[in-house]
Length: 190
Image (cartoon, rainbow, N blue to C red; front, side):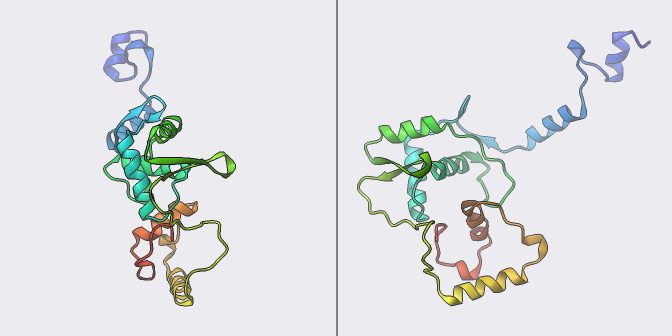
């Protein structure tokens, strides 16, 4: 009987509260089960602890990337994903509470916080030299052999491997992940 709620429940058409379980809802639940687990996520995003922020900044120093707020936020998100984030993957990174992140940096005796162009900020170690790659520099510090190897790689690259993520940071991560001979010895920033 169409008007019988018991018949609808047995047919799987309706649940308590009169809502239908649609394909979108079932797909969302299935994808939630496969989604990477995230640590420390709050209502406005991840709220990293002081030590985690310092580790993220240290990793950016190793990559020769100045710890701008926007880059530090990405690094915090990458380190928060479980299983570990793989550059160039389709893993969606969690949000980071940027206000909390900056507050942690401001409260640290180890860090110097400086305003940067475009409303951004940077967090550098007070007691460390800064040897960062200037991503805006027009100087070419790379040998012709490096450029020739890069040209050859991209010209011979199969179409299915030619798609790289947008943005310098993400693209550099994806290329580094490929462990290309002509990039050996270079940091992410280089």
